[in-house]
Image (cartoon, rainbow, N blue to C red; front, side, top):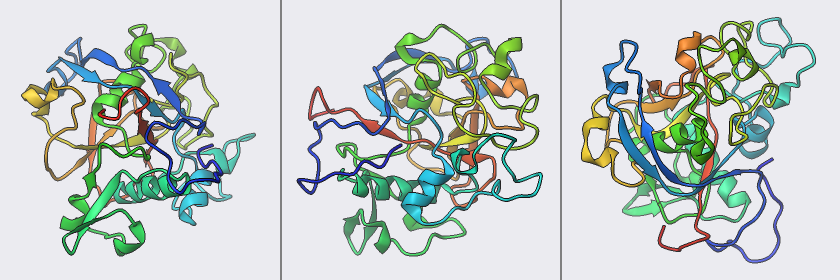
Length: 306
């Protein structure tokens, strides 16, 4: 879906459009957080207006095939022939979401995919005083927290692939400007129709499923609140929503932390956890069979200064 063969100049301009299958999301302002203020997570009750600019987002989680094509390996736990790991009857293994990946691996994938599609990589690591985007020079992926890897920079003027911010993810999950006010992605989390939109504990049978098997939300995005969690760019902070930075245009989360944000529900989640405002966190160096990701790109078609 995402790799687009290209011949011509070595790098696309930031305003050059091409079809990589991503969905355009018109930016806007929305109420972020748990408006109903239900549940035990007070940091989700800090409802505030968040504003995001136009961007593009992949309609599905990155699949095992897409990840393998770019990275050369498949780390997924749900891969195999035994009853627990095998795909459900009639589903394709390659089209299940990749999972059991770290935040670090997701960042590498984004840069490598950018290079394949002749886009400017979004991420860099500081090495000997220089910002290096070539992931081959970053060294081995650490199995514990790393100061260098945790200090990876995001070039906001780059047109390459990246992880969504927490605000972008929630805005897209809610349906963007097409939002109909559902509490989950495409339907209310209390609705009996939730099983038509989300893979969770009631219908997943304890495993991941092929993408695009269920109904999409208002933007045409699949599995936003089910199947696997999505890694986001932001450092997780319980108190971020009360800071001025949360209401500034295009918020990017706390400046530092111990955990990165994960969003969306996964296949073993209770229906209450399919709500679009649920916030999760995970150590960036620890993989989980419940965590995958999807990619976004910034939209520079209107202005080079975005």
